Image: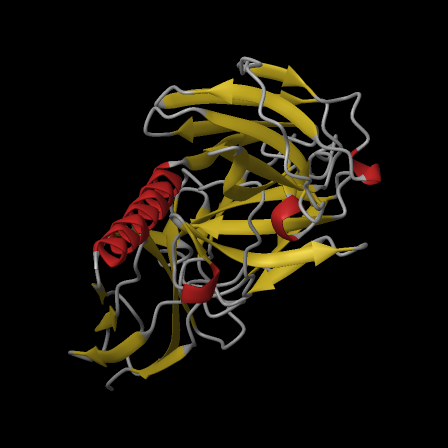
Length: 351
C-alpha cells in the first residue's frame, strides 16, 4: 500500500515538472522589430529563467546541444556560418525578462528558426522554435514622374516611370498622408477604389504591377482630390521588401474634373427675358454661362459671352430680342479646374 502511495506521488511530481516546463515555455516570446535583407532585430521576453539560443535555417534538424555558459550579446555577426549546409549557430545564454537581439550577416530571402533551450535534468530541453525571415534586397531606384491622363468627372489614368524592383504597388487615397506598406507583407490589389479587400490604412492598393506595366486606370470615382504613391519591391510573401522612399514626382495628387452642371427648366419666360436655372456642382466656386442665337455658339450675345456669374444656381437673362430663339449653356469652374459645358438648352421667347 505504501509503495502505491510513493508511486502516485512520483507521478504527480513528474506531471508538476512537465506542467512547469510548459508554463515556462509559454512565457518565452519573440517579436521581430526590424528586418532587412541581411539582418534581423528580435525583441525577446521571458520570465527570467535561463534560456540558451541557437539559430539555423528553419528546416534544419537540430541535434540536442550541450548548453554552455556563453553570454548572449545584443549584436551578433552570423556571416561566417554556412546555413545552406545545415550549420547552426550558438547565440548564447540569457535570463533577462526583456532583451533586444540583432543578428547581422544573414543571407537574404531566407527562413530561419530561433531555437530556445533550457536545462531539463541531465539533458537540454527545446522550449521554442520560432520562425523569422530575412527580406529580399530592397530595390535601389524608386518609381518617379507620376503623371495623369484621361481625367474625367469619375475616372483617371495614372502613369509613371519604373524603378528597379521586380514589381510595384500603387496606393491611392483621399487623404494626403498615404499609409506605406510593411515589409514582409503582401497586399491584395483591386482596381476598384474603396474595395475593402485592398484597404491599407487610410488608402487602397489599386494595382500590383510587374514587368513593363507602368499605368493603372481608375473608374467609378466620386469627385475629389486623389493622392497617389507607388512603391517598388523585390521578393514575395514573407520575403517582400518595399522601397519606402519618395521618388522624383512620387507621390502626387490630382483633382477630378468638376461634374458637368445639369440645366433645369427655364422660368418666367417673357418677350425679352427668362430665368436660367441649374443644379450646383460639388466643389465649384462659380459658373460661366454663354447665350447665343445659334446651336454652335458662333453668334454669342455680347453680354452673355463666357460670363462668370458667381456661386449661384439661377440667373435673370434680360435685354434679349423679342420672340427670338436662344441657346443656353453653362459650365462649373474653380481655380485650376473646370467642367465640360452642359447640354445646350433652347429657349423660345414670347412674342
